Image 1 (cartoon, protein in one colour):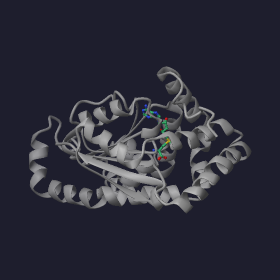
Image 2: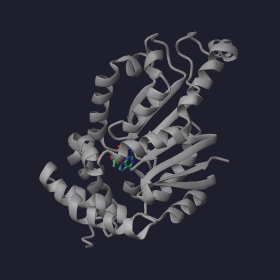
Image 3: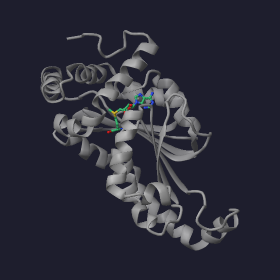
Length: 291
Ligand code: SAM
């Protein structure tokens, strides 16, 4: 069934407005519904993304360097001395919504341990999302999970409102850019990819976790039946919002294939582009590096 609710047939402004409305509607139920609809699989996919980023080991390495040879350089380069040095591993999670991916980075990097010392962390994780409702839920989850430490004291975790197409950050600000289940919702995907390249440092890494196209025919049949028949119905019964979940299904179907997305990432200017399918291609992680 094609109800054009994947928003590809409407104008750019209209798509943006409707996507906003969808996430405004689902913000409070978003996490519970994610678990419910994917039978918890989204957690495994996000864990896998975290492993692929290598943030845990990387954070350990930057801290080790910071505590030895870098410590004196960093302290010397700031006006107000230790405690306010710039982070040396900066991660941006775009379309970060309620913080699921960012919390994995904060946990893997041990930011909450570091926050106890009330010093600015060497690792910073920024969640950027266009929707203030999703950010509101994310911030309150973060406060419940970590207390004020990682947000107010060490400033390791930040929430910023912004559009993936024109991010509110300077050129070359981040080492790692992630976007999970977000790129599909952006109105101009190519513009977002070019802006990802802009905000990353030279040598920085782009990683996108997104629903993709199932590569195995029997699984595709089961998956289609589940998505088109079960998901909108569940949305209606559980969240009293069939339309938002119908959008979810149709936007997945209409989004580009693994190979198409890889070539769009290359066209934006990334190098070493590749993808990894998970769960038979239900989702894929695409990655690329800034030359
Ligand atoms: N990354 C989170 C996760 O995996 O749980 C949230 C994913 S949610 C399906 C999609 C998110 O994309 C929503 O929070 C929505 O507000 C955000 N979004 C949609 N269009 C956007 C844009 N142009 N710029 C930034 N965020 C956007």
